[in-house]
Structure formats: structure tokens, C-alpha cells
Length: 416
Image 1 (cartoon, one colour):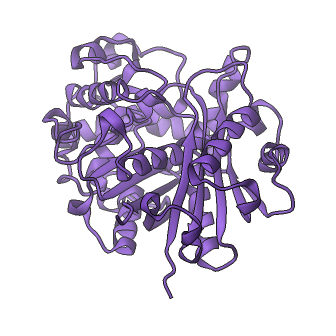
Image 2 (cartoon, rainbow, N blue to C red):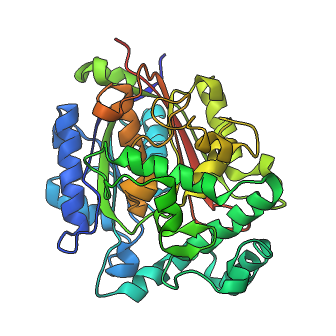
Image 3 (spheres, helix red, strand yellow):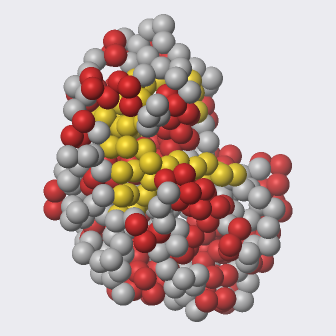
């Protein structure tokens, strides 16, 4: 018996800073959009998963966030499960729905990711919220370790640090970038090339938070955050939502098969104890190998990818983890235009997190939204010609020397 799972409907909101919009409002727009895209109704949904990371910290809405968002839309009686897994929350929710469908527990399910991160009257709390993505009992030790791994690299050791108001995670990425630079010769200009490429891509995406093209020189000259990172190399604070309707193969005749994208492989990995420079055991590498095996494909088969560039150095590192180049060559890959639209393996044609936006609890599903559009040949000016296989890498949190959780999802284009 065929046991495949398909994405048959998907939608997302535009991303940005929306003080007047609520999580419920953002979720409503995404859910109705996904149902319309699938050409189905609320009554067709048999189970739902809801991903969010900020409501508990910023609004005090704990434990039943999905019920609060979905019940007013008419979802009554069905199982609704809440998922929180750092930046990988929405992709983890997709994995749970995927497993539920494959287990035969329902035929049609809904996955929602919605987050509201911008609270202009609570700016200090907005920044403190990021600390919850690491072990709060080890924050001091973690900060000391981050300072140590980057020691001796970069001008700020002599000239002072970057801007004071930034996410704790930018300290992490800055330290990892410095270590990569020291070992492999990666340059700040190569990191800027990855950022500039994504700022260009975002000009082609009407749903992006920012749509301003930037040159490598402009990225380098932008406000410093933590060397080697400048502001335009780092993802902004964002509000937004995405939703997807997923179904089992046995229910596919209810939908338009010519727009149904197959989930070919899906892996979720957690961090492990390893030497910080043992890149072959990096969580992103581990999850990628598991997803490739599940899909029976390899890196050379992938036509387009969305990777978790919470900062632009992360794109360089994940391109290596995903096998798009040799270890240490991720910076070269970006600098040579290989990952740009029209290149051998376009990465983040959506604009990536650094320009499209990063509403943490929704980001994983927003990546999937872009890839579904690519595989349906519905991506407009940013379309990757002939895309048949697509990959999303979505990591989140920090535990030990790497992300606490990472998903890698491989999708296959509709059969026509």
C-alpha cells in the first residue's frame, strides 16, 4: 500500500512588524489561505498542529495556544496539538502531522505556524525572550564559551563591540563564524555575499519583510552587530504566519493532484555532545543525511533549497552540511554566485530569513511555502526553472555547541 503524504494547500501572510495584529489574526489569514489553496473546508480537516514560541513569554497565553487560535475559526472537536521547538517549531509540527497521517490516524490534517515577536512597548522583554532558546541555567557559561571560541579574531577585540541591542543568538553565530574563518579562511566579504544575494532575492518576493536590494559593499558598511556580522547579515524581528493542508495518498483524489507536492523525506535531529570543530557530526549534517536516506536522493539531486539563515554565516555553514560543496567551501559558493537564482543550486530564493523575515514559530512552514511554490512552478520572477526536488533546513535553539533541534525536509514536485 502506498503510504505517501502530500501538501495540497499552503499559504502565508506577508511578514513584517505589525503592532496592531494578533497571533489569532495572523493565523486566521494563513489558515483561510491554505484552505482556499487546497479547495477544501474546515469540515475536511481531521486533526491540527499549531506552532508558536512567543505567546507564552510576551502575552501570557500558555498551554492552549492552538485551541485559542483555531477554535474561533470553527475547528471544534478534532485533535489540536501545540508544538514548541524553537525556530524549528513549524517544521516539527509538519513532521508530527506527517507521522500521524502515515500511521493511518487521519486522512487530512492542518499545520499552522504563527508568531508575533514585535512588541514596541516591551523591547527589553523581546530581547530576553531569545535567552529561552538556550539552557537558562547555563547562560553565564554559554556566554563565556561564545566569547572564548571567537577570541583573537576580528577588530572588535581592540576597538570595542558592536551594537548592544541584538539577539543572544547573534553572539553565537558571530563566534561560530570566527571559528570557521580561522579554520577555513572564510571571509567577512563572503558572508556579505550571501546576505546581498538574499536581499536581491527578496526584491522578487512580495511577501518579504524587506524588499531593498543591497550590494556586498552596502552589507559590509551597514551597522555592526557583532564582528563579523552587520545588521543586514542578521534576521529581523518579525510577525507572520503560514499554514498547510496535508493529506495521505488515499485521500489525494479529493484534491488537485497536479498541485500536490509529495513529502519525500523528513528528518528531525537533536544536538549531541561533540567537539565544536567536528563538523561531520554537526546536527545539520546528521539531519541532512537522514533526510537524504529517507528520500533515496543525494545533494546533487536537489534543485532548490531554503536554509535557516538567522544570520548569513549560517547559510554558508548549512550549505556545507547539506553537501552542496566541500567542507570549508560554503563562503566560496556564495561569493561565486552558485547559490544565486540562475546558479547551480539556488539557496533561499525567497530572500531567506535575513530579508524575507523570521517569525520564529512560523519560519519552518514559511520555508515550505516557498518550496511548494517553486515545485508547482508558481514562484513568478524568482522561479527556479525545472525544479523537481527541493530541500528545507530549519534549525533552532542552542544546546552545547550547536542548534538544539534541526529538521531537514525534502519535497518532490507534482506529477503532471
